[in-house]
Amino acid sequence: MDVFERIREMLAEQLEIEPEKITMESDILEDFEADSLDVVDMVMSLEDEFGIEIPDEQVENLRTVGDVVRYVEENS
Image (cartoon, rainbow, N blue to C red; front, side, top):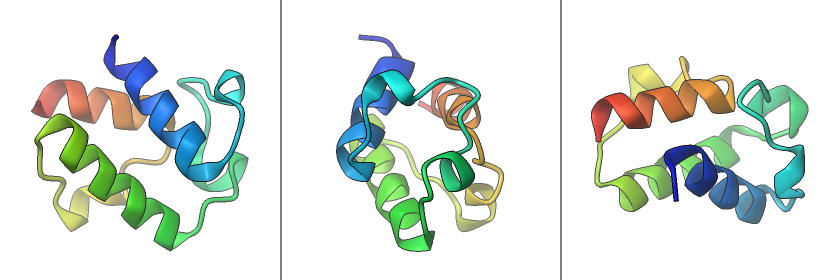
């Protein structure tokens, strides 16, 4: 399974949305109405799933699903 598929499954489960609604262009905060707690949960899940660390200052750059996928691909 590729990185996008894994992230899409994680977000769908965490945010209780249909996986088909999640695209690379989806804005996590606006399109899915995620709040800061959702973002913290997402970051922790990503760190566990991919064995990476995401510094706090990087989190604000992870606006879209594509941003998250690229970050994971470059840092895992």
